[in-house]
Amino acid sequence: MAHHERLEPLPDGFVGFRAANGERWKHKDIEASRTGPGHRLFVAEKGEQRVYLFGPNEPHDATLLDLREQLAKAKPADSLVTELPPAL
Image 1 (cartoon, rainbow, N blue to C red):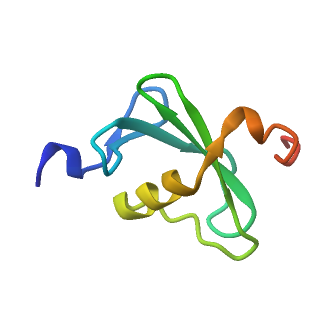
Image 2 (cartoon, rainbow, N blue to C red):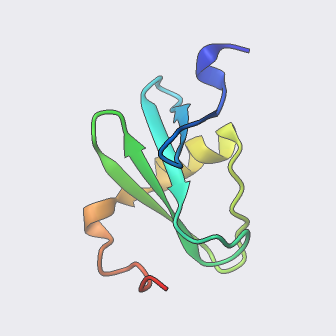
């Protein structure tokens, strides 16, 4: 398996991966839920942050293909500040 085709646990609690275009990103689920509402934070090596919001019955899967699809759909983190649920 090529180096860019795997997930890499990182010391900061994130999991690193490469987007389809080869850029390095890392992700972390903000809620511990496995299904339903919540969001996933994506942070690029360059510093860009995006957030993916899960649907009401959507599983929080995190395969490489899932992450690439979610990253493509994710919105800039600063544009979602008013949309995110309050932290518990």
